Image (tube, rainbow, N blue to C red):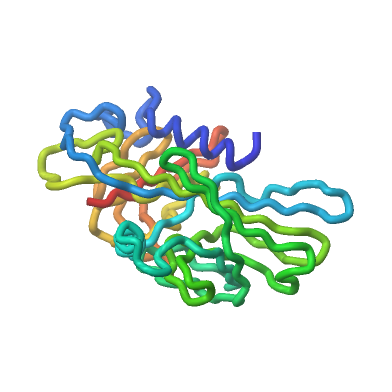
Length: 288
């Protein structure tokens, strides 16, 4: 099983919160995700994206998978772009994929309106639809886009080269040469779902809530801090944190922190274990 598939499997396990011993001394089991004791009952429209990147070696025809349906971040301005799409505004449709080469690439942020460092390499997309999913594809031939090390990609509306960014993806590195062609597949799913998705606990939350992004971290051992490559407001307490399937409590078990130029958490009174098996942490960024 490859790393991406393993992470997806474990993400689902975390979401189900399988019965495991308390992760931290003094941590008692509470109703977990999937065990909601309060349902807001609202419906909320959401859009999520998955990115796949494949390379095809010219000499052998062998396919190399760089990313397989890896989550992207749909940025804040996508809401306004979707309103324009619904109205049929000129050049409001998704039109192209653009590539950047920052080293390193800063993780996507909800406030992003463009790539961190564009190479000017962009390709118009083709698309197919199936139900509430639209899948876009952009391809670079073996002789195209060479000499760059691509580390970020964005999905943009038309017109080509002057559109607005809908979603951004980092977490890969491709040194493009004429030895292979390259295809980006970007699938957007539009849904109207229970705003709580799997769980809403407490009665102080007003309005709708849904998951923006999630992340799994495997412990190296003895960590007192964990950098989380998710854009969230430090101290807003919209980041849910699980350790080996157990929900941690803000301020009692961790605090949200600025860690250098990044964001993450600082553990309170304990460190992570290298195992075996190693501790794993699951982070869920909620929006309401």
